[in-house]
Image (tube, rainbow, N blue to C red):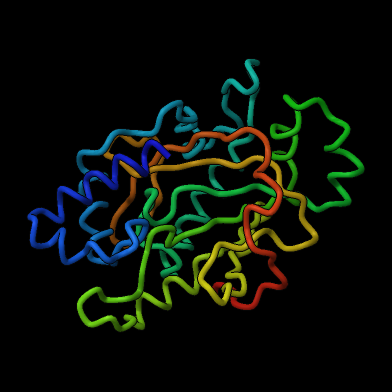
Length: 253
């Protein structure tokens, strides 16, 4: 939330001028156009602060099998497969246009989940400090990403929707897998809201990521690399935080 506030302040400075501020006064301050978000992202990528408490997992991209971090106050080792698969997710998401930027106004977090039967039989019985490290070893682990967090498709001047931006918003709920399967775009909510994990999954924990020139990890694209950091969240989201999700409909080709 602190990162979001800082970027919103930057957006206000980028808007600049009393006349523009007056023209935008009737807009919902939570949402920005694609052009405004692109401007904020250029600032973040080149000058913005890096993520706090990042996972020091850069050796994962050079063939390491695991890395050390602190979780619930204890030193643990986590599998590098979690890092390499997460980087693959982000690459696929950017390649199909489900997100354009890795920062809070577009895509900066994921919620982790595990099949409910596995949760009941195994993970619900573990001490809190062992749950997430154990889940990261499980090929049944999934991640739910939400992009377009602060994006509007409506042009503030014409009051009409931009079709390309609307397509971006419709792809904003992404289910990704840690067994090598391609990402899946979930059915969009009719009001454009974020949706929850499909019913068969239990949600627990998650992670944040952020692009910056200080990033330790790289999302390798065809024409460039996006430097990012990743940090873990603890626990699960509050019940009812997202709208219910039925079935996935669009898959990455």
